[in-house]
Amino acid sequence: MKLNVSGNTYDIIIERKSTTRNTYIRVKPDLSILVTTNKFTPIKTITDLIEENYEKIVKMIEVQQKKNENNDGFFYLGKHYDIIYVDTLDISFGENKVFLGRNFDIDKWYKKQAKKIFLEHLNEEYNKFSRKIPYPELKIRKMTSRWGVCNIKLKTITLNLELMKRDTKYLDYVIVHELSHLVHADHSDRFWSLVEDNMPDYKKYRKEMKEFWM
Image (cartoon, rainbow, N blue to C red):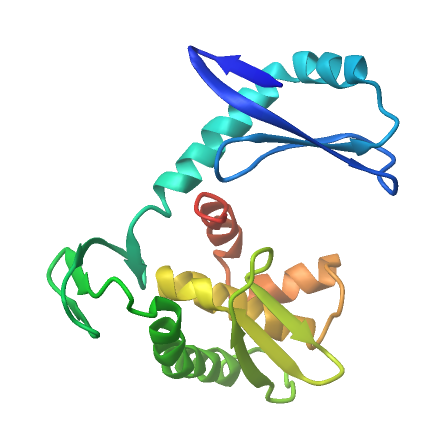
């Protein structure tokens, strides 16, 4: 199946699951339209749903296109660099360009930088946090659906390696968010009030982060 939007054609992928009771529509990073539904849902029901939600799907495509633009190229601490491939095993920066070898392990390099930068920002936010909490162990890994995770029982905070690509104000927000979970495990009003006490502009940052989250 395909969907035509202003002369452009987008693939519609139907994913049937016996455990899914409702039908969900989302646009993937490659701009294909994924329909997740029950294995018994008739095709007619799916096509009717797509037609009924045409305008919403168009908006979803536009949002995903914006996210793709904001993730195209090389990013480091909020700055975008054009990639220039060279015969080297190292990485170096120009004013608006990054020079690296084609086999350069970017994630390994990001993680090396993150170990220092994330720890510095964790210490800064922890030291000025408004509530007395245990100092958490810091973990770093690449995640596809979360910016950060707090394990309250183990007192650990895991930060998404992707934060290395963005301005550090977003890193600080995620740290404050996870530190707040050491006080309130849920996302109750008390939790968000604590986040706001320590990061007054958190709503602004959350909204901005949606523009580049994949």
